[in-house]
Length: 94
Image (cartoon, rainbow, N blue to C red; front, top):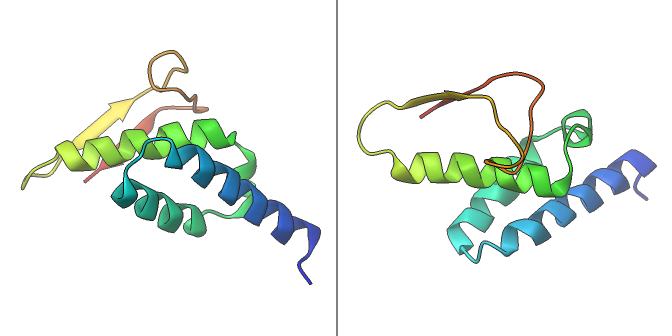
């Protein structure tokens, strides 16, 4: 039997994957599933499923748009533009 934290974590991950499915991209969905498995319950509590999905989609687009070079993106996500908010600046490396 799962603890309440484990059950909540699974439910939250599934809710996020349900939102990610709306992007209608099987490769992105596989990426999101793997990324969400790496997040701890404390990390999942910081964001809504919609915010997490928007964050993952933004990173996915950054990776897809990257070619054979090193890419760095630094930004302060805003709900209107990126669909999510962070407590500070975000640095993405690929």
